[in-house]
Image (cartoon, rainbow, N blue to C red; front, side, top):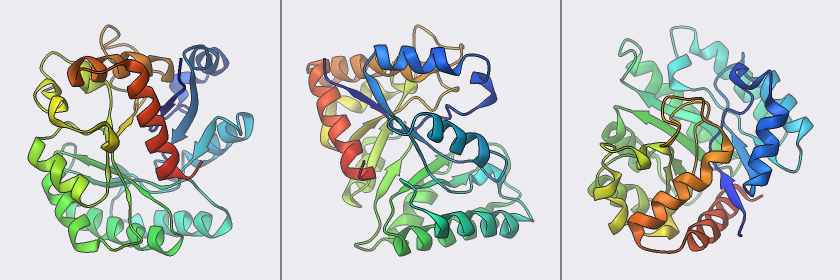
Length: 256
């Protein structure tokens, strides 16, 4: 069996604090050997870096400010992010982006924070990991305006249309496919069959968005094969092929 990658996992979350070793062991048993960890804000950095220190061959930290942590004091958060990016290498600047689901009050600040972090990604030649809940078209437009040869990355938790997928892949970005692909009304059954594996990464976004048959439970990296099997079924190919191509895509994007 080929190895898998979880390209987006909050494995350092408090939701795993009592059994993280067991969670990691289950991941390894399912051949999920690489886990990429997006940052949220200054409160998540220590736990994330501690997880990376415990599993240096398996867990890789990103550095960025999540749009849901952007408010009127976002410059202070960005100062911390910038300081860390200057200290050491991270696998990505993330997760960054926009979010119009929870709170629309700081839309302008979200866009500004995104643009600033994109420029840091270019400076450090690091990919970006994009969050865009209820704001995918707006975020694609932002990336189209900011794109140059130095900018690459992934739109995580993609559940959009074929037209949106094409705009994203035309930019040279990947699509992060997670548990939503397994949901009955997730809509991915209408789009994945017409996509290319060359443009996809697998992710859990754990502890959120657990795939069927675990929907509503705590998500974890060991569920990646369930997502891979769903992708294989919809794209009419072998799960080994899904594992092989998406793992290669992740290694190409993150450089690890």
